Length: 107
Ligand SMILES: [Zn+2]
Image (cartoon, rainbow, N blue to C red):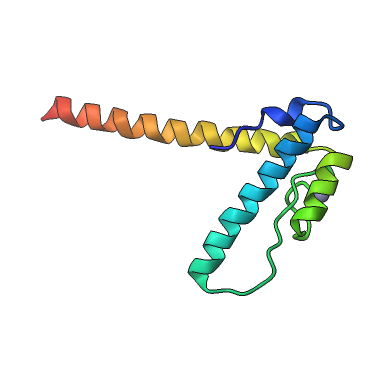
């Protein structure tokens, strides 16, 4: 799970910039893993979660995404999406456990 606490820090701070770098490195690493599985040899470009691109515009190389995140900042709705994803994943886990418990009680 990725820690997103850095997005609340001032963009000029080294903590924010390190957080942005880690975020991009992880995204590129995950993409590389997926691409290796698919045997594709395309250049590694990722979607940008900055306030202008909002993960919907064209893909960019990591250096451009870093520049956007430091100059423009992370889009709050995109950020909300990350948290929703985490929450939904947790919810699915709980529902699975609940279903198991109900199943055991019925047996
Ligand atoms: Zn961007």
